[in-house]
Image (cartoon, rainbow, N blue to C red; front, side, top):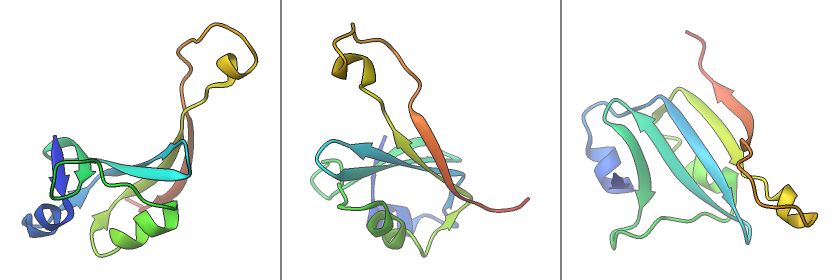
Length: 101
């Protein structure tokens, strides 16, 4: 499901259990939000995935929301880079922030 920043802010008590900052090629980042309504991708008003120039910019944009945990997710293309067959490798996850329960 896609959601815009305005729609997200207009939700009654929006809680983001997990904010995944997905690292993309070309120094871009996108937001994947896990909340009570399931998985959502942060999009612009035209339904396109909203891209950010840095993880800090993305976190700053969502700083007024209740985010319980933030992780940077970096998919790996290591096998392809060294000439091996592509394979499913779990992405590297870096926990940036987590609220204490």
